[in-house]
Length: 88
Image (tube, rainbow, N blue to C red; front, side):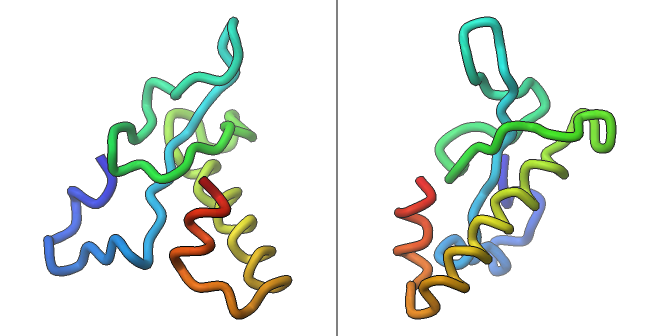
């Protein structure tokens, strides 16, 4: 799960988003088998460019980073909690 590979003192939950990867299943989006999962995941992004980064959240995370960057560019006074709420 997200953040478990970091020492406890480096787990800034209030300033990080834990990203999971989703993929299109037969009945719609589903959590990818290789993805982070559980209560620590803040948001899932559909996998893209799966040939470029197969079996990891390496492509999902930049998609969320881009969404955060666009939000912050348009609304620079948004706080971390507001960004997290909007994206969820």
